Length: 159
Image (tube, rainbow, N blue to C red; front, side):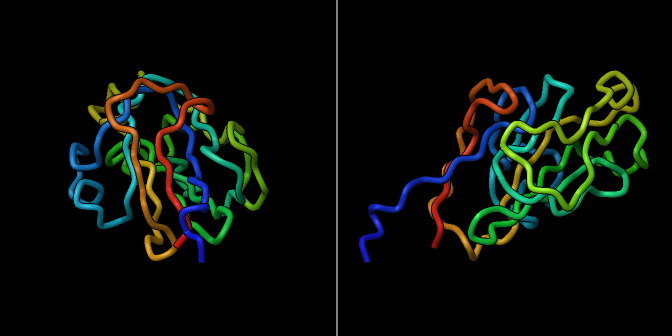
């Protein structure tokens, strides 16, 4: 009834770097928001953490991406790098197993930046809400330098 009282929900940076608009991601699936809406991070860090509290519902077999289910059924995808699935897990170390409830800042993955860069792959990391029908008023913070687990990269509201 009084929607203006609904608070903004926040996502923290899952990895250190500088935030960029999704349209700048060098992959059409992300740039054209086919997989969801959000923001990307041009990474400088090597630890990937949970950007908020929720269930760690999936870590891809190749450890290049993970999904979380958040309050209200919001589904979140953190995809580390572009075309990094081709590494078949090389350069990625899983620090926790899926199926557990995590707090914002919980380490999920560690990446080997040098190895991934040596393969010529981008480490730009999209952070996406994949079920857009459950949220509104997505407000990505673009052009800011962020640290993992502490700086807000996006706010949103439930529908």
